[in-house]
Image (tube, rainbow, N blue to C red; front, side, top):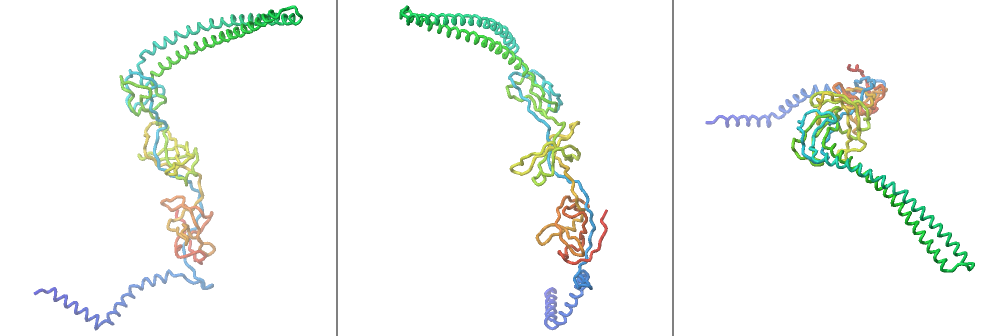
Length: 428
């Protein structure tokens, strides 16, 4: 025989008995227990309830306030960013040829002007000698061209004299013909002589211009020969690919025997001293930063560095609406690498603010963040702006030089409520 069903039946019967026959006694017992539990809460509520002012009969709320004096704090803008090399360039060849120098390995430090890649000259020296030989030849043609000018000028003078003579003869023939002393045939002959003399003058002038053009051509020949020499020398200078500035090799230089074409890479150089710290400032903070401002940064390695702002972008990134800022930092030991994460703090103009406990802040009916002040025995709400959050409290702006800030009981009062203020000392 099982015992459990029997026990359950007995318990159910007992419960039904109390619910039906002893109901009043059961409810009385339950009510007395609830009153005992609620008694402390009622006492506590009665203790915290607002009191009445015996003189005016107005309800007065007891609060605790803090007498706060504004202090000037350093304001700063915090930016997340990275390190960036001051300069980085891919040094490329300007001419073609085989590399005949031993390669420098990446990581090596090179000075400005140091040879990186040397290209085989090939026939460039022969081309230079040929260009240099053409210079005297072209220069020798210049005196010959210059000597033709006086000859052309003489021919022009002779042609002009013949024209003058022909004009005199023509004038005389016409006068004699008008008086009846010369025939028409003679007049026509003198006119033909004038036309011929004029043609001779034009021919002489053309010869003079040709002589002068010959001088210009000879001079152009000399300049072309000298330009060929300069081109050949420049081509030889391009055989030596040198470092444009001092820095570290990020890649090996071109291998011995490799063929370089114009535009082929010889090596990549980066300059890490000084190094840049690059960050992107939100548009709400950019007005606090000026070029030349002091800045500090903590690298991901824990190292702390200092520098100055050297660049602040005037246009924002179209996608993030942030502005690029650059801080130049000395890096003589080259310990700071390109691309390290950095937390940058940029100094800005200081502000006057109050240090208050974070718990003293509250919201008004409109949802504005602020604090409640004790003024003339009344509670007044004052909106504030958070400048900085620290372990000691919150620095806020928007209050006067002196303020009595309610730190306990601010949630139980509204504007205009009478308060009984108890002041406490500010924590050092």
